[in-house]
Image 1 (cartoon, helix red, strand yellow):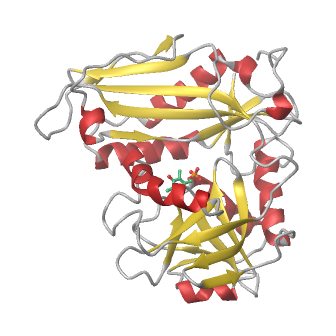
Image 2 (cartoon, helix red, strand yellow):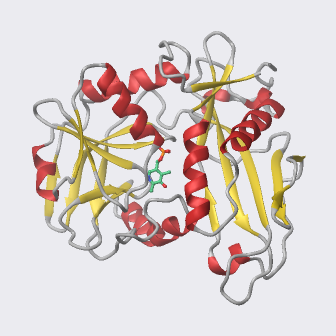
Length: 342
Ligand SMILES: *Cc1c(COP(=O)(O)O)cnc(C)c1O
């Protein structure tokens, strides 16, 4: 596998677009998927009537590949993202990508861009963004007749340099992210469109993340705008909300398994808003950062101080180290989560 490219400042990479060798592209027409192609230019030309542009027939995924200690390159649990995109495609009337094909495509595009996978020890990784869109023209509301599947890749840096750092969160009662039995449990761009207004407001007012309550009653915790929610009780139990409008996070799933492996009790159940102040720690969970501790949550005039802003709860730190350890090949991969790129 190719070594990291010379001349890139890996230590200062952020989370943003940068040019690589190519992206992967596959099209669906007349009832079947084409073979994957590798496209150099980062542009896509499409019909002005494309269904994704007008009616939001679109979904995506987020995955990471790591250069491990032994020099191998591994993609973290692409099988889970494959299954999730399959479900999302079915929910949005798009042709699903077979799980095996999806994994092969992930491996192929990482291999084509191997020199852009950051060196071990820099805290960086390669971010994979699979994207499935309705590209056939569709003016009456109906599923498109043609689709495009793409995987864009880019090297990204450690989200927070020098380890994990607690942040403040806000709850807005004026806006919801996802309704019960809506699209909250699948990964569509529309969920992000639904939250972008609240996100801009939160950012302007000094909160990096927003937490959503259930849309129907505003009594139960659901998830952050782009990441799952977990709380640690005073008895050390890992609690995460059970709700039909929460996106099943691969990170959360992995952390729950690691918790069990470490002898930490796990509960997946409804989490009332009133329970937040009883937690010893709260965290946002997702591929980009794995765990972001949340030390304070504001809702209107109520400000809940969950934990110390400068201290990471030992349970969160242990879980973070375990998952990152598996990703970078420092901890034994007992569950076969790492898919090697050969
Ligand atoms: C992508 C996403 C997550 C995180 O999922 P991971 O698989 O852990 O990256 C959580 N919530 C929402 C709404 C998301 O879109």
